[in-house]
Length: 322
Ligand SMILES: NC(=O)C1=CN([C@@H]2O[C@H](COP(=O)(O)OP(=O)(O)OC[C@H]3O[C@@H](n4cnc5c(N)ncnc54)[C@H](OP(=O)(O)O)[C@@H]3O)[C@@H](O)[C@H]2O)C=CC1
Ligand SMILES: CC[C@H]1OC(C)=C(O)C1=O
Image (cartoon, rainbow, N blue to C red):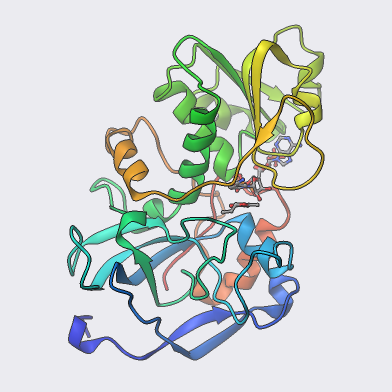
């Protein structure tokens, strides 16, 4: 039955955890979970596809308990779907719009208790953008948190045309976006990136001029130094040895030692930022990277998390159909 505002159910299928632990142990499928209530500035979304992020399993493990929301919780930040209902203060989105976004504005500050690994979710209008017409829901779901993190980190380093950048962790969800944005949006003159042997060609296909096999050489031992280093794997103490005088090191590893002058940040989700990047997504300059294992069915969500926890995923894991 087609969903319209009048036919929105009060209960839904959702993956829920009520205690901390490994996803495969604590995630339970609830077929009778409350559909989240709409606030005035929010829209209700029928979830078509949702992507996994490390923050999802890190929260489940209890790593951010000091700033996290109370349990039980439905995990999931990234969504692509269809607007079913809009709150009274919503100005631009309307029922039937195909949207995508990261539903948590401050990623670690009381994230929503009803996330995107469910049949329905809610988000503030300003966190969402219209799905690029050339992308399907699976591709769109893979983009928001990763591209937002990549963009914000590059912006904070003031990367600009003609500068060089080294991306540590180039094959991951964030790293694959950093390479593309650095090359095709920020106009870096030289993009280098690290990965294991099997992923070097992927890095080059995304725009890397130099792909470094970290199983064979240490980037900090290379003669070349960089204006910017974007660290997505927690190697800031090595990265600071590989920058030019006055160079910048940004890391997205939220915990652990931080070597001077490296700095870290937690992304802020923004629908406006997605809108700004839409032209690069629509002309194909920036493309989502879905892991070669393809999408995981909703029923396979715990297994998908087990794969993500290996730290070996290429690009993004997307859950579809839901
Ligand atoms: N601060 C913030 O706002 C954010 C922080 N994060 C954090 O950033 C990190 C990366 O996130 P995300 O990209 O989604 O992670 P992914 O799980 O997508 O990263 C997996 C990739 O990391 C690569 N990798 C693992 N170890 C190394 C290494 N030593 N050198 C180079 N590459 C390596 C793997 O490539 P290979 O198989 O070749 O090793 C793999 O392709 C996570 O810790 C996450 O929690 C993410 C988003 C936002
Ligand atoms: C959205 C929160 C951000 O912080 C960490 C540690 C991640 O993995 C994130 O995505």
